[in-house]
Amino acid sequence: MVLLLLGITLSACGVRTAYNNLDWLTVRWVNQQVSLDGDQESMLRAWLDQELSWHCATQLGSYHGLIEQMRLDLLAGRLDAARLAEYGQAIAVFGRTLTERSLPMLTELAASLNDEQVQEVLAAFEHRTERVRVRVEEYSIDELAEDRLASMERSLRRIMGRSNAAQRQRLQVWSQSVTATEPYHLAQRQYWQERLAVALKRRGDPDFLTRELAALMRPESAWSEDYQNAMTSNRTLTLAALEDVIKLADTRHINRMTARLTSLRDDFRRLSCEGEPAPALLAGARSTGGVRSAGQ
Image (cartoon, rainbow, N blue to C red; front, side, top):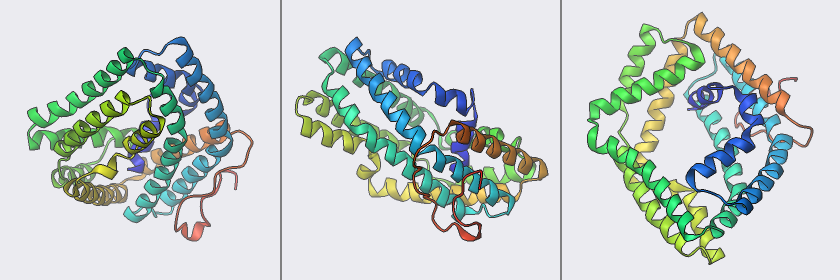
C-alpha cells in the first residue's frame, strides 16, 4: 500500500511542482465539486495559506525522514509485509492529522453554501457513486480481477519498472485471491450520500453539521462486519504479495526503487521549511535507530 502511494506521488508532474501548487490545485478541485462565490474562495485561500505554512514547517521533515528509512530498509532487505504495514500505519497517521485539521474549514464552507450549491455537491457525489455502480453492475468477478491486476502493475511500474515473469505470476495469484469489495463500497457510498444530504439540509445547525462531517471523514466507522473483514483480509493478502514482489525484484528493480525513493526524499527535504517537525511515527524502527532525516 505504501508502494502504491509512492507510485501516485511520484507520477505526473513531480512532488515539488505539485506541492508548490497545492493551493491552486485544491481550489480547483473544490470548484469542480461546487462553484464557490468570491467570499467562499477567499475564505478557502486564506485557510490554505495558513495550513500550508503549518504543514511545511511541521510535517515535511517527518515525511522525508520516513522515506529515508524506507530507502534504508529496501537496501537492507527489510521491506517485508510487517514493515510495509508499519509504513502504511505511519502514513495513515499523517492523513488523519490533515483530515482533523480540515474539519473546521469544511464545516464553515458547508454552512455557507446556498441551495443551488448544495445540489452541485450532491450531484458531484452521485457522479462518483455512479462510477462504482457501473463496476458492480457491469463487471464480472474475472473482469474486476483483471482490472485490479492491471492497476497494480501500472502502479508498480512507476516505482520499479516493468515486472519480471515471476512477479507477474505472483500478482496474478494475488488478483484472484482478494475479495471484490465494490458491492460493499457502493452500499457505503449510497449510505453516506444520504447522510451528507441530511447534513447539508441542516447546515444551519453548526453542532450537527460538524458531527456529521466528522463522521463522513471516517467512513470506516460505518462499514459492515463483512466489509471490515474483507478489507482486513485484502490488506493482509496485498502486503504479502508486495513482500514477494520485492523479494523477486532484480538489480534493475532495486536500483530504480532506490533512485525514486532518493528523489522523493530530497524533494521533501528541499520543500521543508524551518520549524519544529512532527515526531517520528514509525513503530518498531529496529536497528537503524528509528525514522531519520536524510541528513542524519
